[in-house]
Amino acid sequence: MSSLYKRANSNYYWWTSRYKGRRLRKSTKMTQRRLAINIQQKWDYALMMNDLDFIGLSNQTSGKVVEFFDHYLLLRSRKSEKTYLTGRGMIDKFRKYLLKLKIARVDEIKVKVLDDYIDYLQCSPKTKKNHMVELSQLFNQALKEDLISSNPVKLITLPVITKKELHRPLDRDDLRIIFAGASGWLLYYLTLFHTGLRAGDVAMLKYGNIDRERRAIISLIRKSRRTHEFPLSRLLMDQIPDLDSNSPIFPELYTENERKLNDNLAKPRLYMQALLKAENRKHATLHSFRVTYNNNLLGLGCSIQDRQKLLAHSSSETTKIYTHPNFELAQSYVDQLPDIMGLIECDQNVTKM
Image 1: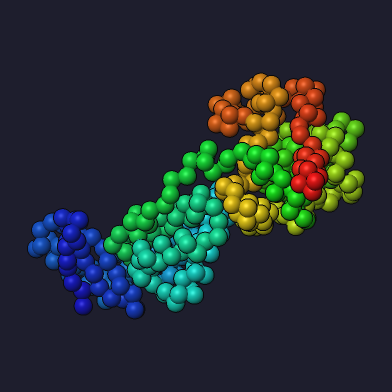
Image 2: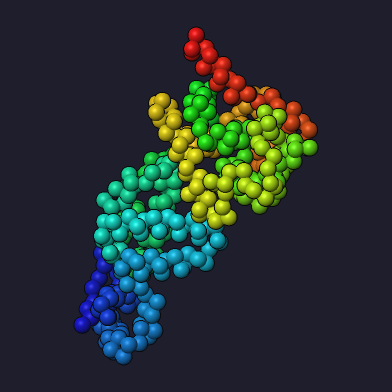
């Protein structure tokens, strides 16, 4: 048995009915009830004949979380592979969370569920915001398909985190804490500190990317999809063993799967953040090493044009965001970067005295 109703935010009459356990809803696009009743009768007959195509609802999913999330991911797969994999990771994580709460329908996901989920996520404020952006797109799709009446993400509040606040530079105390407790992540943190490369690009390095004669790293930058040559400081090269060229330098991080890479990078990031938090230091990210590298070059007098090349930025405007080189000149700069392990050892000796 179907019925007609009006939504508070719509002038049109809406038709609704049940079909094989599903609730179907669709706007008649009519403001006059007698015209809406005429459409209602036609749609009721089409439903009786199992002709959802006539009504325009053949692709409408049920309101069940499992079915609708799969449907949404199918639509999402039309995006680029990287965008799809990132989104799928977030959706899958949220689906598992709902499973724990025994929430089976999309319309059962209220603002309180999302607020609790934000607290549940063990990640940076920026990543939490990215999760909510993805979920907002999911709920917008549910809204289009009349599975919900409003998008619950629109009613939650996330802290506004600016790039400058999030990716702050690391000072001497931060570096002392991180490198003194780095343990198995020591070489990874050293590479970030001495190259300024993005965390994901460092994770993907193989020993074959190291040119020891030229004292350089030749690497594909994932963001620009271009190969760059970066100068390698003597201090860092001494720390990297000369092993099989096809072997990854950081096997615990290396993966060809973009989503898996993001998950892997959480390990050194969370480890570093735990070290800083234990000493009541401000929040920082792996990208903070890149900001610090840029600031160190700036302190050495490296021009914005040279820093732009060394950081593999496509424009000087991007470099300016960080306040933060021609290859031969670059090597002279990176060799002047602080011997961080030497500084830490010096600090520890002073403390013992």
